[in-house]
Amino acid sequence: MQLFRLTVAQKIALGYLLVVSFCLAAIIYALLSLSSLMGHSEQLVSVEFRTFTLSRDLARSLLDQERLERQILVLRDASMLSLLDSRQQEVASTWRQMTVISQDEYFSQLQKTYVMFDQASRKGLSLLTEENWDAAEQHSLEALSPSRDRLLKRLERFRQRREEAMDDTIRLYAGDIRQGYRLTLALAFAGISLAALVAVGVILKIHRSIGQLTRATKAIAEGSYDYPLTLESHDEFGHLARHFSDMAEKLRVLEQLHLDANPLTRLPGNLTIKSELESRINDGHPFAHIYVDIDYFKAYNDRYGYQSGSDVISQVGDMVKDVGTQFGTPQDLIGHIGGDDYVLLSTPDRAEQIAAELIKAFDALVPELYNEKDRQIGYFRGMDRYGVEREFPLLSMSIAIVCSNNLSNPSAEAIGRECAKMKEHLKKLPGSNYLIDRRELR
Image (cartoon, rainbow, N blue to C red):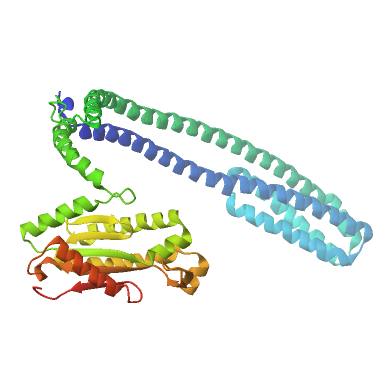
């Protein structure tokens, strides 16, 4: 079958594609359903619920208006007419808001009742304003109160209809939500199920291959670098098996390098540096010997302790490795002689940039290594190696660069001597500095 001829990555991608496709369909359907429900919900809130609330407020305003009107008729106090006018305006304002959002058939019937009430209310206010108290009281009993009662009853029925309509709408929405949930879940489950079938086949293949590779890895870890692998497939595991033999050979070399590596920085040590240096001298190709030293490290170590000093050594080792990797060549050697001394073997054309970047990175790191007091004043007082108290500046870096093509007879000893002279000169200068020996054919 064509499916079994796919690579592991293609099978995983197929399973992932199935899950994504069905889940995407489920998400799109869910979003469309949600959008529709949001539209209906907005309609429910902005129209149905709003109308229900306004009708309730209108009924309260009508009752407040009726109580105030009766008070005025009992007291026959014209000074209270302004309050009655305010209540009437409040009723009219609430009604106008209802008119804007309610336009159904039942509202038309309610509107006729309101018009009759409004006319009676205006006439009653007019009689009260004229202080025709008897006529106003008779009008209230014969026309205004009955029209208000009819309006209140219609408002009550109107609210009941609105409440029933909202309940029906909410039940409808709940059914739509359940249906959408079931369909979304079905689409997601279908995608996961199909992907699971593909995953089972891939897992079985991976399990068999991993078993062989695990046994091979265990054998290599125990030092047996010639463990036979019988994977003949043309997928990623077949390629991986074929690379295991190459890896075993490289592990032999790495094991030798590891024995020479510095325990703090894991960088190659003296044996590897010396071997590489002699190899480059014998090849005759020009190279740059970049010697890196940290100034005032012993004083820092004495003040902040062995652990802080070890941390600095480790951090600078990482920094030298990062800078050398970024600005050097793949063939460069980055090593750790020991203590606070490091070496990079690169090409002459890249040496100066590597030195400049090292100093830039180191000077940015230094302030973080001190406490607030030492960092602010830029030094601290301590005893030098002769027992004399003196001021020690913050850590700095000195870099001496010797290029092999500037020496008539380059050798490891000659390069070491030149670096030592240059380092002695650099340590007398303030701050971090680098120096390139540009003298020719010495």
